Length: 138
Image 1 (spheres, rainbow, N blue to C red):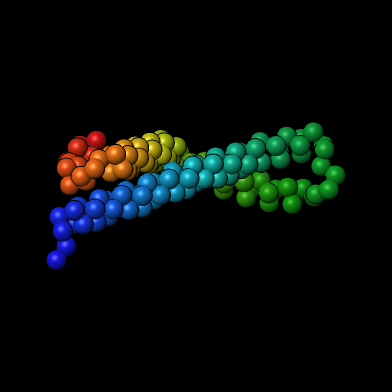
Image 2 (image 1 turned 120 degrees about the horizontal axis):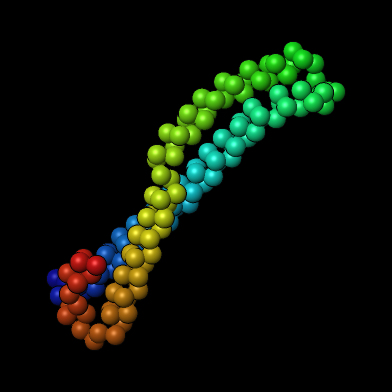
C-alpha cells in the first residue's frame, strides 16, 4: 500500500506533466497561428500587387517578354484572385494574431505555475502540506 507521501508526490508529478503538455500545446498553437497569419498576408499582398502591376506595365509598354494574350490571361487569373481578397477579409476576422498572443500568454502563465509548484515541492519538507487548490485558482 502506498503512503500518503507517495500518493501526493505522484499527484503533483502528474499535475506538472499535464501542465507541461498543455504548455507545449499552447506554444505550438501560437506558432501555427502566427505562421498562418503570415502566409495569408503574403498571398494577399502578392495577388494585389499582380492586379496592379500587370496593367501598369502593359500600359507603359514595358512588356517585351509576353504577348498581349498571355498578359490578358494573367490579368484574368489575378482578377479571380480578388476572391483571395474577400477570403483575406474573412481571415482577418479569425484574429489569428490575437489568438496566437493569447495562446502564448496562457502558455507563459502555465509555465510560471509549474516553476512555482516545483519550487514549493523542493523547498517544503512535507509535500503533503502543499495545497494544490492554490494553483488551480491562478
